[in-house]
Length: 257
Image (cartoon, rainbow, N blue to C red; front, side, top):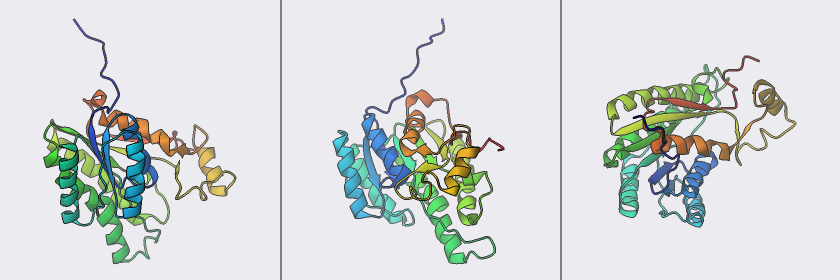
């Protein structure tokens, strides 16, 4: 007889590391996972940001650790993995959210700018996967943060767009190779308000009005609205989901006008 009971959408009791998890969307994801019951280590290059975010995670009752890391440095990621394993006893959820951007145009971007953005955004995801997948002894979920720039033409973002397109392709490739033990998916956020862009996307600005007009839900997102999608992909409720890119953008990408 078929059973129609469902697996709860929760990460309660799971162990997570969020790389790039001390600012913007990554920080919201880290704190959101902790609020749902996960133990979480959020890391970035900034010691101050790591300490501040760790305080927030502890406020949610999570076990955590204060450790910086640099996704361009494999030794740094290996050291991070050792801390994660020592502190949490293993890892079930890995979120790759480290970011870098250049707004140089296609005909003007330098090799240095191109290499920096792709090194962080694309090669960083590869290094994180290579570092943490072997530590996921009981399987688990890897979630890479992509962008609408991977599929939509956005001016002055050639390196960023190329890197995010690569993230989505790498997500599919690693989902195939790491299955069935590890599921690998990506989230492509639309326009979200963060402390870093709140002036750019403030109500009444020309850019905000254009975004709101095109978005079926009529507004930009609040970063807390990305937490539910992350918890779903990280939870056992998505046990048959891998190699997917979940777009969370209020309908922006699929709206022609």
